[in-house]
Amino acid sequence: MPATKNQTGNRSRTDGTSVATVTMRSLRNAALTAAALAAIVPLTGGASAAVTTNPTLTQIGVAALQQINPSIDGAGVTVAQIEAPDGYYDPPGQPYANLSVFEPNPTKLNQPASKFAYYAYTTPSTTFSSGQYSSHAEYVASLFYGNTGSGVSPGVSAVDVYEADYYYYNPVANDYAPLGSTPAGSPSGVPTYASPAVVNQSFIWEGSDASSIDEYNLGYDDYADSYNTIFVSAAGDGTTTATTPASYVNPPATAPNGISVGALGLPNVTGADITAPGYATSFTAPLVSGVATDLVQAARQEVGGSGTAAAATNMRVIKALLLNGAVKPAGWSNTSSTATGSPLNPVYGAGVVNAYNSYQNLAGGEHAASTTTTQANASTVQFQLNKAAIEKSLIGWNLATITSSAAQAAVDHYDFSMPQIGNNSYDLTATLVWNLPMAQYTMNQLNLYLLNSSGQIVGQSVNTTDNLQILALNDLTPGTYDLAVMKLGGTFVSASETYALAWSIKDPASSTPEPTALGLMAVGMLGLMSKRGLRLRQP
Image 1 (cartoon, helix red, strand yellow):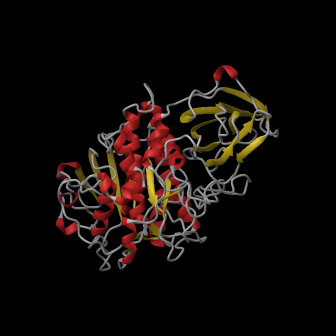
Image 2: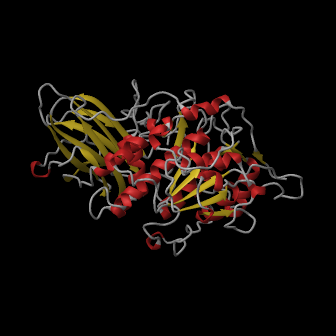
């Protein structure tokens, strides 16, 4: 992620202190605040409205998705909602006084109370407490899984609601296995459907310095990599840059293995992975979390092809599908053709989240690389065509492992034939995602190229500061192309790296029109409401 420019640098605990000491020091140095908390108009319960009547859900492709598969609503998926407490560490000497105010009200969400469990420093509970009610938590929930016509994933099977401080310093920092997963600390023993699959975090750690950011990133990245957890986090709303060094992306959204979310209504806030309609990232993050949840459901149902559930539910694949399916507004561009550039647009990230596009990308199926080659590490990537293995689909994805050596780079080649039909041309979007591995301080370097049949590089994404690459190329002439994933050799974290690649190649003149970014609508109304900051401070 662009905000974590030091991800190839030192992420270790250099002072020799224990995890508990470091994390408590981080808490003292970084007050926890909700990202753009707003005075929320109370919701009312009632029957679910038709999705097509909700302009925000229409804008992000949920209505179009339900038209082709109305069963996709997050059914069977357990999710988590992490909330900054709507209260204070106050008065001094009573550290938990007024703290645990973080719960949404299931009744107002038109959801059965039996779906919910609540976790904080107090005893876990399966019963909603009106004394712990948070309007912020409720509005986030209404957009994520609310069954009142505004939620992206109203069919989720269970919701674990955590107070943010408790969640980080217990499950995450201590590497406790997710509920329902055994054994703890053993990735190989975690079930494919470890719970929760998607974790929404609509808060920021305010005032974090470089040391505490590294600490948070290490905790979240290791946890995500261990337990296949999809973290979706609000980037922050940019009224001030609340981190040192200054960045509009605040932890926990700085964790490279997660997904950071910006807001279309905040064009001056830069650096997020993806955006959604709204003026507050607290309320755009749950839209992305909902789309991720719908994709997990579809992946489990093998929409991506028979036998693909395990691969398609991998967090790398879900992230690649989300970013690749995002609508890129007019004028979208990136600078990842250079090592110091970024694969993300400074305003839109990968683009505006779109459930329909990402679902179609999943439905394109899993397709292995056409061939794999090795070459001298310092050489420019070489065109390779395997005529017997031309990719059968111009839209699809793959989860693969690639291995290089000290002297040789490795290249996975995905070969495509784009046929001549009149005077047509093609648009290509491809997204490559890999993780920072557990307990490592640096990342492997993977690059993404598109070459034509003459061996010329048509486009490349080779930035060295992110664990993703994006190609977005328009007006490609018909012909044969090689989409190449290169893992550099030489000095690396590990010889092998697991990556997810998603691609979509379309003839814009003949393709069915897809949903587009329509301009700010329903969620943007939140920007007209007054804001209030809620801070968590140590006595």
